[in-house]
Each structure stands twice: as structure tokens, then as C-alpha cells.
Amino acid sequence: MKAPDLHQHAIDGRPLSPEDPLAEPNLRPMLDATGWRLTTYDDAAEHFLARAVLAR
Image (cartoon, rainbow, N blue to C red; front, side):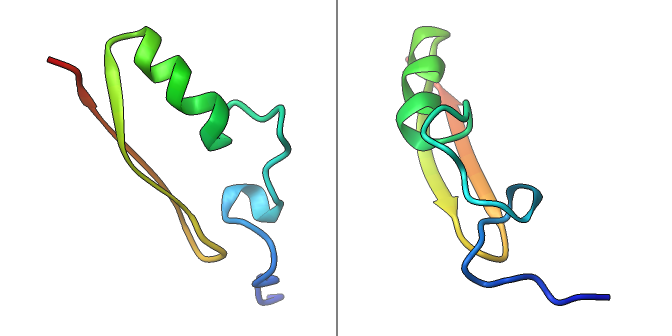
């Protein structure tokens, strides 16, 4: 099994394009518009983490 390229991101082993809905500049306003607030965003080589909480 091939080791992941550490220069790529965790989503399918590829970098996120600017048009990708999971790219932070796109994800944050989509969550805001639906009543969620993005509190953590980490798109590292070995993992992807987006954590949101309900906005109050």
C-alpha cells in the first residue's frame, strides 16, 4: 500500500480546489447561512476536521 503524499490534503488525497464546498472560504458562509458556526477547521495532510456548533 502506497503511503499518502504529505503535500496533499486528507480529502481523497488531493488538495481542495477553490470551488470545493469543503474549502474553508466556501464552507464557513454555507454553515453561517444555515444557523451553524464553524469553530474548528483543519485540513492537514493526514486528516480533515471541520467542527461546527449551532449558532445561538
